[in-house]
View 1 (cartoon, helix red, strand yellow):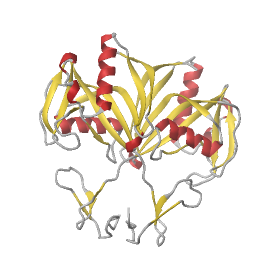
View 2: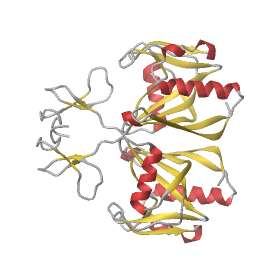
View 3: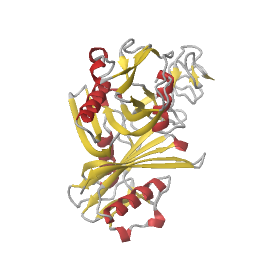
View 4: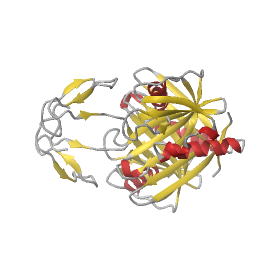
Amino acid sequence: MKFCSECATPVEWTTPEGDHLPRHVCPNCETIFYSNPRIIAGCLPIWEDKVLMCRRNIEPRKNYWTLPAGFMENGETTEQGAMRETWEEAEAEVDIISLYTHTSIVHVNQLQLFFLAKMRTPNFSTTSESNEVALFSEDEIPWDEIAFPTVTNALRLFFKERRSGGPFNFHRISIDRHNEQNNASTTQHEIRI
Amino acid sequence: MKFCSECATPVEWTTPEGDHLPRHVCPNCETIFYSNPRIIAGCLPIWEDKVLMCRRNIEPRKNYWTLPAGFMENGETTEQGAMRETWEEAEAEVDIISLYTHTSIVHVNQLQLFFLAKMRTPNFSTTSESNEVALFSEDEIPWDEIAFPTVTNALRLFFKERRSGGPFNFHRISIDRHNEQNNASTTQHEIRI
């Protein structure tokens, strides 16, 4: 950020009075500009013994496989964001079962939320964002071609918990690649599918 | 937003190619400016049969009682944000037990997260943000002087679940004052304190 978005004056990087962190501040109109983590909302869409995945048609990680997810928008709930992204990336309609993973990805300032979701029908399609969409059983998952570690993690947790007969737990996870500190906390859920 | 924060050119409000929503876009350097929901992280701090609350020393809702909470910052986890806010507003040190409420407040573009947290000691203090800080048992809570409905809601859920002997559940809630649509979904947790 170089200029004030309200009055076009060059901004300063300074700690406002009463604050404890530096912010971009306009010396003319005194607007303070905050930068905060963003939310990625997505689904782990389930049909019978399979999970729906999308092969990315966009960078980053083009042509790698992912679960449908994207930035939560203003004016929606986390659940609505997850369902919207599942439609936009895979043209699949789902019903939310529960929140499954809550991952603070500290080095990129993101909170990533994956919901367990039931597909209403086995229908899906490629989209502008996904050049391939497919249902995979556990032994068909393309483990070596997954776009993001958080997706691998959610899938491993899901199949492990399903093999053990459930219940599906709630997983709070943090990843900080800068400090090489990863933590995971599992909370028992009484979720059965 | 009136001007591009990168090159000071007046921005346009238009839907970028491949997008589905209008954004502020710079016609000169082509930067797209996204606005997304922000995360409020906070704690419901517990000491024996009491809960720690803060009387706000700042607007909005100055002099009304709240649970310690505030905007999550870049470079921290949701848990760290909740613990930091509890220190900044009440000088109380806590350990996170579990995520308790996850509330999409649609009309203000916020996701509010309250964690159940155990106070390490019964120590706390007023701060620049709180002109009074106190431990309340259920029958002492100043119900008529609470700053925000989400705080009232988290406290009511907590005391109700404690009276019933637990466990403490996980509550996903959405509030949309514009559409008068409120939803709540409770997920059983095996949390016992």
